[in-house]
Image (cartoon, rainbow, N blue to C red; front, side):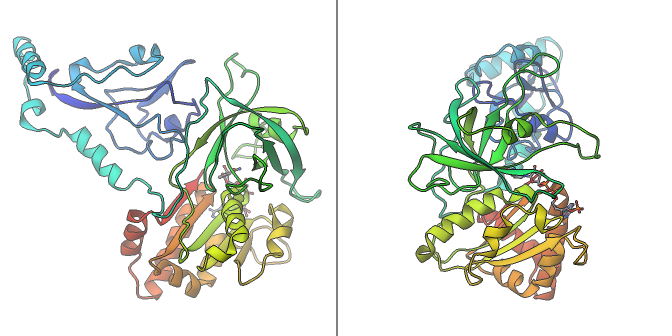
Length: 419
Ligand code: NAP
């Protein structure tokens, strides 16, 4: 490759980025890095695979500049940006000048003249074909109304512990009052919380994302508020003691306290709104937040939804399961609930994927239904297990899971948010 090869340079918009670190965590080849100011992409490492695109909550990640490889923005330049530079069109004159310059420098001109689509561009386009889509009947989501530079101030209207006193996890239902500020949030969207203070190195804390647990008309209809489901983090994935910055801040809030909020974020994990839609919701622990929002939306508007609703909900035991009591009060013909308790001495250990297999008939019917929508939210580990269970169930029902999955994704009917 010569300096005049054309690349599609991947850039992150510093005006929209909330510095949540998701892209850096996601990139499989360490092409993304950051300083105390900006998140940036290394042009010489990025292969345009697109793995970072859909996890980005704001869309700041999805910026591309067609340019000569030799003129790609280095990371030092990107660290200094307050906004993205404008796109410089590659006119014939510009291309000719670059080819002349490269020739003078003795470099080969490969892709620039030979192909209008270099490999990086093709890779990005391919990944976009499989990017998540919203259901066709989803409502219009507002995103990025408040960014890191101008967070909105919400006031705590309530903070209630959801798990029982003797449960090992401390999960809270936190209601935030938005006053008279315009901040519409749909079921399945998330907001960012700006933890106050600075980290050990004196930098502001990263924003933490939480799915909204209330429906679009608020936790209390007619009031401009929303609810979050927050688990107090006291250990890391390996069981070592850590104090989660945002979760402890949120769980310790009192009524009347102020909270800095950014967002809303997310434009695909949205519920269908058409009458025939059926939904299958699969979650573990606090991954139940968006499922509660969708269920509550449908419960408040039952007359508009004729489809079926299936819920598979995994937790260690019933004392650890957020919203256990209210869930049991819902009519059976409104919500078909399947719990999976992994550490309950009274029942055999099982995960959501086991419950899904046991309900194979209902699951196959929904997967084969052109109005069936699937939502998966919670622990990363369950994703593979759930998809394997779908494959088995489809096999037994004479369906090809590969075909079903392709169709679900293409039609915005398969939504996965796991962490
Ligand atoms: P958790 O209590 O640690 O686990 C919930 C259940 O999932 C337990 O029964 C656990 O079983 C089980 N589980 C563990 N590995 C599994 C696997 N491979 N397949 C199926 N089930 C498995 O859950 P949590 O701490 O609440 O975590 C929920 C997740 O949701 C987090 O990753 C969180 O980031 C994410 N989330 C949260 C929100 C929010 O708004 N708060 C929104 C979206 C997503 P054992 O532990 O007994 O093995």
